[in-house]
Image (cartoon, rainbow, N blue to C red):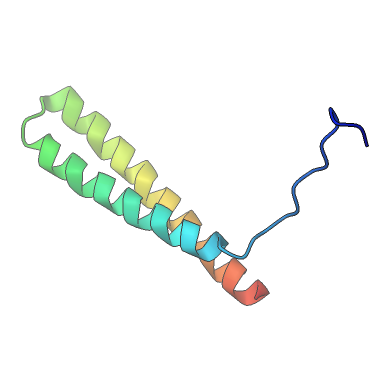
Length: 74
């Protein structure tokens, strides 16, 4: 290979569970912050926050499923 060609990085999944757990924690914190913001929001803004938090909760379910899959693979 010459200098301009780069080989792909090896697939390192050793810290995937830790990264996914951090993503879950960050998403939970975002949900909590959004709940605090809701008390100052108008009706339409409140509905947007509710909808976004629902998507966040669905994302958390997905993260947790991935965590289980990663744990089983190791």
